[in-house]
Image (tube, rainbow, N blue to C red):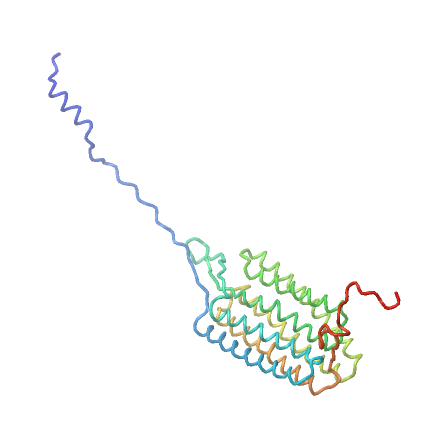
Length: 305
């Protein structure tokens, strides 16, 4: 059989040329975009932070001015109270300028979304916890010195307070529900320890001084305990269950902070100045520095040794 070389070449080339396919092109899978919700403050929240910052600055200046009106050995309450509002002012300045804020991503189950999950990005004001970790121990020291608590009881109250604040911070950044409410439970237990120290040991120590001091301590400590009880409630409906927005959270904490710091301080200092029984005089190093009696000597032998 004779094969025409030209015809054979053309048949070979036809096999190399792609032909149109009769099969339909595969349909691309749809891209599923997760449902995202951003929870952050608005102008209302920012203005609230600035207002509280100004209040804390004014209160600090007033407390420092009141401190200079009394001798150095009687300034303990004034200095502690002024430090409380000073640290609070720094914290509110950081939050108002956006420096004391972080974003926490929380994934919650949602039947109304395609993926069954809702990704929530909520602002967490970590500067607030830094503020509380410093100011609440100082506030407890104010109350402890007013009552005349022992050093052991003061140490227990302050350590419990620090544990309460730190576990609250860990809870605010926790992603899983179990961890979040576990930290929250730890914070509540620590708070009960503080309440016990103030309500039982503190009140008992205050009543041994005189009736006026005992009555005043009961009133101001009860006022503080009520305010501090509201804080975890606000946390539970804000960072905890996400039932209120960030602006409402800011306003609620702002009201509590103003009551628990400037108002508390004014009440404490004005009553302290008008009630001699609450006056506490600290001599030695606090009032006079490393002078004659406060000098720490190393290597000096006693006379006649």
